[in-house]
Length: 216
Ligand code: B1M
Image 1 (tube, rainbow, N blue to C red):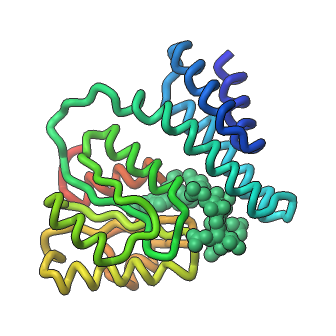
Image 2: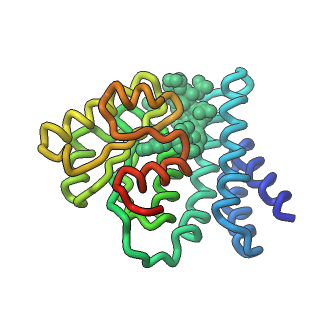
């Protein structure tokens, strides 16, 4: 039963059907399914397949756009259910965004969802955000952690710009910087002086706890 709905959620993303994704997400919640499993086994599995189809030339840019829309549509239903009733004391305040010139937002959003689900107060500033916007948000929200996502090899250097901008603003010793995104690696994080790198949303949570020295 649950396997069937996960498959359908994945299929809605692969076929680029936002309305179907919303319907299925609502049905899954009505059936009492765990929203996080719906995201991981349904939506994420679907978008990963879309990436493979794009890599092999079977899908083109418009297919990516509508698949991204379907994934986000499903997330709008599942995300509130995931973070719904949490009133725990927060382990830290996070400012999270995708770097300037880069509009990929799905992975960053998932990281935010997972951090929120684990009690962090997350301010998601969105995609295509400049170093100055990261710094302003960090100041405004009293961030203890700044997370920068980059999905393009051409936009990875923006992560370094954010670190430098935090230094210039005199904030660098007050905030830890976490970087991630498909082309990003630990060695890149080391090279630019980031405090940590996470490969996926789950490891981003573990890293966040480690960086701010709080028990997970
Ligand atoms: Co684009 N795209 N895209 N794309 N896209 C990729 C990234 C690409 C790998 C596809 C390919 O060639 N196979 C390729 C990048 C190549 C490179 O530079 N290495 C690419 C390209 C080239 C482009 C364009 C340049 C295409 C063009 O215009 N010719 C263009 C760029 C536009 C721009 O940003 N300026 C473009 C556009 C788009 C769409 C708009 C159509 C759409 C995005 C829709 C949206 O976000 N609203 C899109 C999509 C959907 C993809 C793929 C298919 C999927 C990305 C995704 O959402 N993955 C992608 C191929 C792929 O990755 N398989 C591709 C699912 C998501 C859950 O994973 O984002 O990796 P991911 O996030 C993971 C981890 O990386 C990590 O945790 C997440 C959850 O596990 N993580 C973090 C991410 N951020 C983190 C931050 C952290 C920690 C962990 O701490 C702060």
